[in-house]
Image (tube, rainbow, N blue to C red; front, top):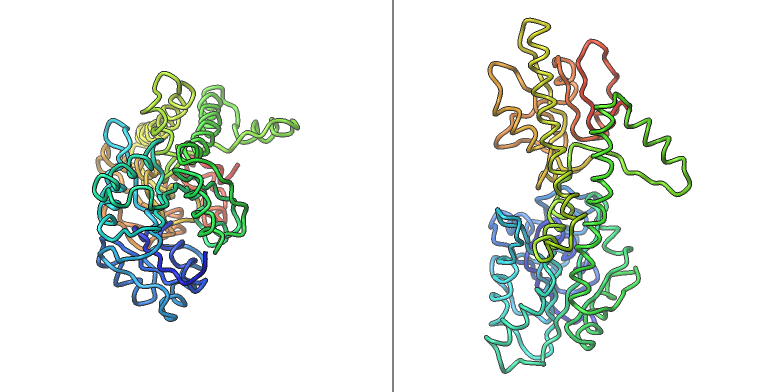
Length: 404
């Protein structure tokens, strides 16, 4: 595939924008589409609306070169990338309405030999469902389009590197589509491209994150056991990992983000009887956040009884993982919300050094919060927190290993 093509990316979030900027950096014309007018205006000014190292450089150069422009409506192109959210409903069933809406907006622009790719995390069979919708609306295009599923597998904070260097799984609805999609990704991916079918590619994405969820659940469950057994879980894991075939992860206050906290439900929803371990892991990681909130609330009550006054509390961290600004599905945010629901006259300092403000939580600088608080609950292991010195005069609840 040559570079004289136009790409239309639907969704300019944490994956869509970096992908668009990266493709544009290769000299390819990219039209980015987002429903948020502010996002569109920000990008067209050469700036970014999310925190991601080096992304601003890519966007600025691509916009200045005229290779990247954002719109609020779909533009005609040769390649269409669907990179929109796929949340779950209240019953934890996957919601592919955004994918379907994006697809329906693309349909009027499609022409023979166009390439349609879904990158959004999706239940097994989604690509085939979208194919049926497209051909129902445009029967004259049947078997004249290339369609594939290619999940992202990048780490926030290192996206621009991993989009290039990581291997990718490419699953077409047929072999022709797989080959066409691999030609496209070869324009900007140095990692190995692994061909398969769309259903396997869809399940591969879900499997990767379900596997990680299960591993984290083991560590979180171990932390609950160690708390009851009065054992330092951090020391225990360090010692257990001295075994040559043991590699236990570090526990935290739960699991968050747009992948690990969501994707396993896509499997459990479709295969409830078969996914016993995967389902239980989700329950365990959700329970850990509930347990942390209860632990903080009980510590506040204990402080009041023993000290005869209400404590000042510092909630350290709101993001779903260290050193990022992303609060999606964050267990720390859930814990903070649960704690303040049961407060009386206690003073609470909310700390998240990676964002400037929040519509619910009034933020405090991390050193100030640490100095003034009687009880300090570390929920996220941000680098800034690791510079603080342990203070015996405070009640420290370390749920993420700051002082392990």
